[in-house]
Length: 107
Picture 1 (spheres, rainbow, N blue to C red):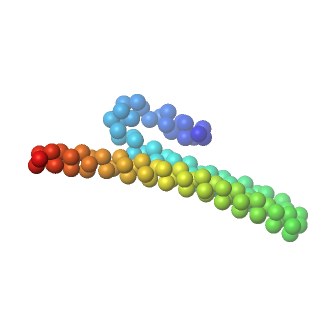
Picture 2: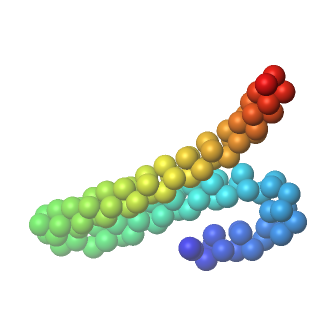
């Protein structure tokens, strides 16, 4: 977990978390962290490319950056898929409870 992420989460009061008002913001924080990682990696790559001395070095750095982006993307995709599944399950809970309640009244 990154330091900025910890600061944001620490700023959220326990009472807000208990009432469920902040729970919906946590995936947004994760998405912003993903964007920040992508931006920082791109800036780092650009700085490295400014110092290349040969086309071979340029290709080596570009290939390494591309591999790193693919690995990062794969990990972030798994994380986002897990978040989407949790959010879907959380969103469906009230509907399921309502349907169970309605079915129990008709039975």
